[in-house]
Length: 500
Image (cartoon, one colour):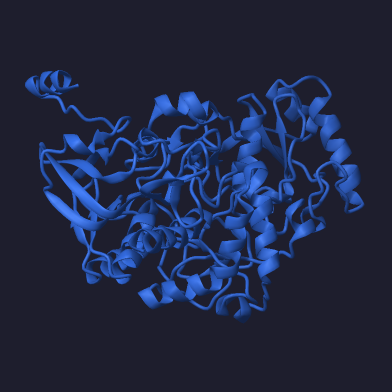
């Protein structure tokens, strides 16, 4: 081992790796010491650091880039709130949201591998978490946008940000809008949210080290974590965490090798959403026995609405077959698009339902075909003869009666597509800009402790945000605001647990 270290050092390479720990007896010195060490200055890391510091711990935070924010700062800033009767903003808009309805929706949205205890924990504490963010200085406007949008272009707050009104979710949980966007003019409120949290990190006395990459964990022979090895300006340092290390380093969407091994379907998406989301946080946890779960899951979308009139159209694949109720969340539709195992996907519209997609130019959504009859559209798309026309005829017949027995699209969105000219919007997977990020990560308790293969905590190690497999863990059930809800709330939980 020692000769290997010397050989690597002699040629200028680091002897350390995120996939294996530095053993405690190999540490030559402690350059930094604190009660809690936090890796990553996104929303999860910020909230973990704030709560650990307020619990009386000395905290050091390490960030690989030159500033705060991470992927959280690239987001719309939406957080999924509700339960306990609803937030004041939901109440002002005329909505009452029970804890059980929120919990049931989260359980359904979690999919086959849902962590029901985590979902219920968030549902029970969501309203209190909303007030905690208010106390930090995050501003929310008492306003509601009833139209289906992706995120506000204004400084408005409450939106329908998921599949709450759509089948099958609406059958088991009373629909309620839960996407809360901060009072910030225009899109991209994630930067505003992070600026507020970063200010609280500074006020809490957290010692922040920018441009500092963590290259290994420090653990004893039983894999109890004692600290980390970092690299700053070419110099290697050793930091001791007396109470624990919290990994909040994002997911692995920027690591094509990890994607090919775990979630190859996401390689079809042209626009990964991330900054330093290279999977190193997950690998660090695995290096000391932590288990990664749900690694095949990811969020994917090409936002084809607004305007919401486009929801009245129908999606078909290259076989002319419909495959989803179009009134669900744009991410759920996109997840089903990837499941088609083909690239050619079209949204069929008539003159009454057609409008130019708001983000069409940015996401490369264009008109694939047009005609005065559906037969002409079918021929121009070179689809199997009679496939498209049969699908439209069946849909129109049931829509005329206000029904959708195939996919249960809600009646408010049902309308026969009979008003020419007819259009097929092209959402070709290998051309349109599909965005994605990963949902798999380290297996943790809701309080943040990283678990090993036996389901036992790895002593001294915690994780939150996309480094952990948290609240959102199923692409088909994702709703906007779930990642930031997960990162901020369970980041706080991890911070308190590590400090304690």
